[in-house]
Image 1 (cartoon, rainbow, N blue to C red):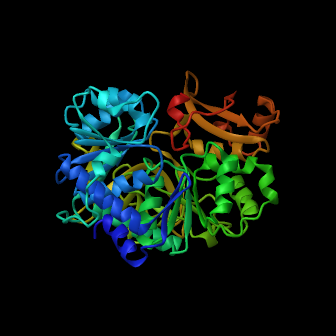
Image 2: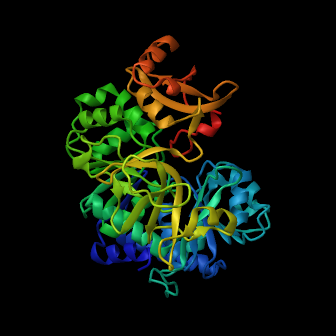
Image 3: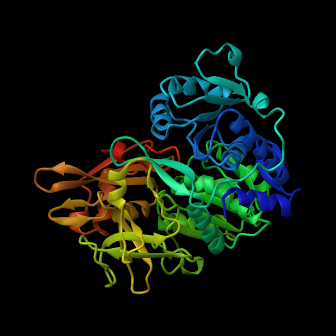
Length: 516
């Protein structure tokens, strides 16, 4: 099974059903499939060959979806690059994977052109739309620059001949490295089909699901909303971002969305919107969360705002897409758990020697076995060997996530920290997550992040960064008094720093490295 077959089968079964809604336009499965076939023909004509890498550098829109499936139909490998990426980083990514072509928008050329100047492998650039002061015919970049319309003109809508097989790469997803440059996570068709099948199984997705996606398609969480909907025949409503929350909520109601994927920063914004308490969202069937665990207070607030929605607390990482989910019926009993391994996957904890931990409550590194585990980092064997190691059976390598967890007697997982995120203070190990949970439980705290900072006496001191809700006044003394009643002495923050906002990635995840 190849990823593009999800689209092709839905186009055959549900040709007139709306597949994508974006910027007021509505495209059916048949239309998306036909445009993707034309894109495949265009890319081949521009020189893209079997296994070549083609980058997509665009805002969320139906064009990204057509590009992704068109690249796959051309037997090539797609990578979606965040549209806010600056030229230096874009240049690194394109050079790293030796991309053959780039699909972008006219309003992105300001960043794209300086980047591709130093990428000799790029032979063609396909440009969608128009931008003020941009004339493609006058651009002298040494590359074959062609408009989207001209590239697809004359290309047939019939399905191109297929050569690829499921062990071929389908996608490269670039993820931030703990140090240095981003790494390209290699996902085969087999990897992506396995992950999508597992997730849609436990979410119990169905044809009448309408997913409102505000996450960038460069983020695997956002990307898989499109992949999964193509698989089960659902509709995806694409928004560029969550920058205008009220407009998104209006769209949620107008399109009668049944699914809403979020990250904790989005939940924090939603819970600030007091007007929502008077709204009715009966059509919303489920809410999913990943990237970071939802604070218990957020879970309670979301259940009040969206009483008909089932909340799925999940955990994953780019290297295997998704790891676990908490069955919704367990949410009240185990609100801080991220559940168990998803279908067709095995997970367990190991100690520092790689020996499996069987005793409940003992902290260990989470490892993952499954068809969803990546093939490695693109042309980076050293980093690959750090995370893909021999498993219990001779035929496999398993993924060492670098994340520390505890497991209860029933097998449910509880995130503790990144392996390199644990704070050692007074000789004791402090979980930043545990301190953050206490801070989030304080009335008036909107966001919190905890890191360790060097300290001559303690080794590391606990430092908390706190964002307060609008109109709330809390002092450092009040926060410390609250924490002292709920945290052991060695876990107490030594420093509290108030911020108007916390630094975040383009996907809304708080970046602690920018706080250190």
